[in-house]
Image 1: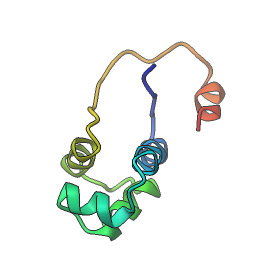
Image 2: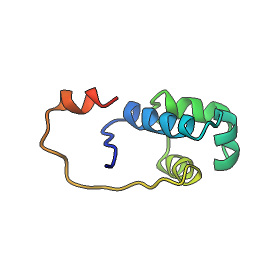
Image 3: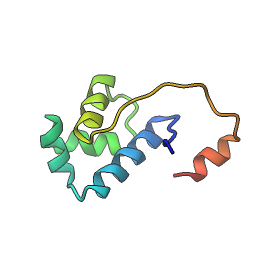
Image 4: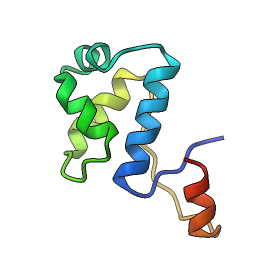
Length: 83
């Protein structure tokens, strides 16, 4: 099942979960993505000003991909409960 993210905070949470699943520190993820640890921290905190190309670099380092699809018909609260 694919994870759903509808805002920067949810994206950050998914990235944090994937990083921790691999037992990587923020520094290790940053090195793999060509970014500073501080940038990884901002992304995981849900910084809305993060550039799309930066998110894509982090996803590539985690061997993940970005997909776009129609919104599910579930309640917004149900999506929030996933995180």
